Structures are given as structure tokens and as C-alpha cells.
Length: 266
Image (cartoon, rainbow, N blue to C red; front, side):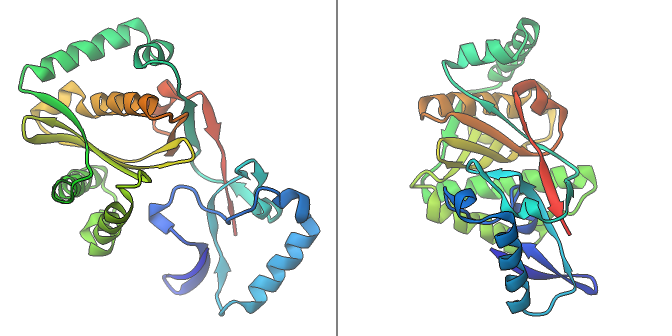
């Protein structure tokens, strides 16, 4: 799954996915390590490079060391650590037992107090969307909330470009009904306070695109409440791993007990 992309005046060989892919790498068989040695892989890779259209540089980023317990063969190339790691946690039992394991009694008490105060403003509802009309309105709210977040951070707003909005809409329309894509929201009456767009694959939940509304109610941590509903949804749907994906945000370390280091090759 490779692409050649222009970066300024340079054409780079990269993994497909780019900005909207946290994990990048090859598709591998379950017995890859038994079939392909380092020397054979390097021969194959040399042959692949010779057959590709011309490019100036190789830039393969966000690569995990292992893929489905198989050694990523691209680790045989010169690599350096990616700037950020990924984090995930095993999830089991009940929501209450999971929260007790991960959070102190003081933290849980503070969160419950915030959630009670939020509930005083109206009726709270956790919604997992599948209806086409609801999907469109939820995604539009997600784009708006995420764009505001990007502006606050002073980084490029992906959703200023229609290609990214179209990608998320197309993926959701095609895959939300079979469970690969999960789109959910926390609503207060008819107002969407927080959303999340993620994926579920092989009993692993990928926490990918969280958003929340700014304003007075943000102080009650609606995004945190939505995430706890998502934990409960995972526990009810036999999900065993909650993957917070790439990023060293401090809150992830409260929840996660495992880290996944990523590597770049150039």
C-alpha cells in the first residue's frame, strides 16, 4: 500500500493513509517470519524500488515493530523512533471495576460530580449512530467541533478541505452498519456535546477522532463522559483492547498500561 506524494519540490515514496492514518505499514501474512528472512526481504524491496515510477526519497512513517505478532519486515531497513508513541489498554469486567482499576477514588468522585452537574442542564443521551440522516448531522457537528480544536492549537485544519470530509462520510456510509466504523455522540437534549469516530477490528477499538463542543458546558468534561460510555459499549460488545492510537497526550497515561513504539524509515 504505497504512494508517491509531492512534498514541496521533492517526490516521496510513502505509505498510503498519510495524515489520517496513525498506523502505517505493509499487509503481512500470519506466517511471514517463517517464509521471508531479512536477506530475502531486502532483495524483494530492492526489486520493488526498481519497478516503481521515479521518486526522490523514501519516507515511511508511523510503522509498528510488529503486525499481528509478525515482525514488520520494514524494521530491517534503517529506522529511527517516531516522535510519538501509541498507547492502549486491555479492557474487561464491568465499567465500575475498570474505572476503579484505572482511576483514584478522588478522581472518580470529581468526575461523578461534574457529570451530575452536567445532567442538571437537560437529558443526557449516549447515541451510537447508524441512521443515514443522523450520520450526516453527527459528522457535520464532528467536523465543526474538530475544526475549532485545530484552530485553537494553531495547526492545519484538515476539514477545510472537502476531500477529508468526503473520506469520513464515505467510510461511515459504507462501514458503519457492519460495525467496522463506530460513530457515537453524547447529546444533551438535542445538542451534541461530544462525538467520536473510530474503528473496531478483531476485538480492538481504535480511539481515533474525538471532539467536544466549546462553551460553558465544556467545564463538565463531556468528552470524558462520552469516553466512559464508549468503555461501557466496548465491554458490552466483547472488545478486548481499547487503543488510544498515536500521541503522547498526558490523559492517555491515566488509562493505558501498554505502549506501542513506532518507527520511521527514510
